[in-house]
Amino acid sequence: MTLTGSVHGVALPIQIVPSVLPCDFARLGAEIEALDAAGVDHFQWDVMDGQFVPNLTFGPDVIAAARKHTTKPFEAHLMTLTPDVLAARYVEAGCSRLIVHVEACTHLHRTLGNIASLGATAAVALNPHTPISAVANVLDLVDMVLVMTVNPGFGGQSYISSMEPKIRELRELLAARGLQDRVNIEVDGGIGPNTIAGAVNAGANVLIAGTALFRYAEGLDFAVADLRARAEAARAA
Ligand code: DX5
Image (cartoon, rainbow, N blue to C red; front, side, top):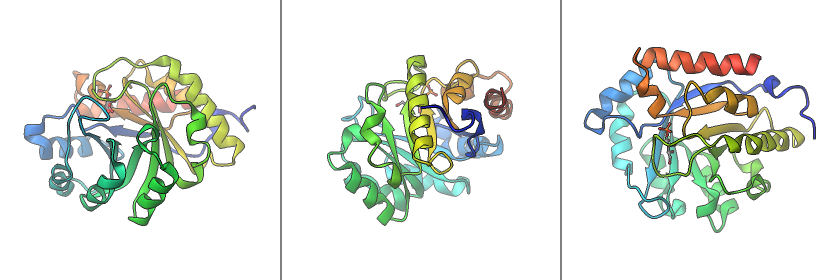
């Protein structure tokens, strides 16, 4: 299947989105404000339950406490075994998009519909081993598909470049369904100055960056601008 036009012709804008995971949790409000001022598009909270992934992170009350520090949207990446149980709490905490893992959902179609009934936007995430076909029958229920470019659970891991054909396959599927202007492709894990172009060239438009943002000696403002410039250049290439 050839893409209608080039993958670079997709209408959905490039978004640079920080993972809150590498922030200084003792100064979370100030960190959110600094990322906001640096020009990020919105925020991703990596919610981990210690069951779906071997790590434990943010409860809804932590997110609710951070809500007043920015007016930009929050999305919750639910790396949890029970997204149906938790969804309402994270919407109430101020998350306008919930991302659930296909691997954690026995009844994914129902779970995504439940998220919409809470007034939030639904998105679905795929671990590296999970094929695109796992979400082929729910693309009408989501505004984004997250293709994990690391195995979930921790920040600072290496980018899995073998996910790029999978991202391309998703982009082609969306184009074939006429959804390329409605469904975003997000990538998460190991995104930085040396990997962002490959992900964008494959078709991603929402780039989650955590560790890489904080590694720039020039600071967050430069980091966000540099990643955005690299992503836009890759799309224009
Ligand atoms: C993995 C997490 C990380 C985090 C960002 O479960 O979801 O991918 O968001 O990771 P780095 O630090 O690689 O950008």
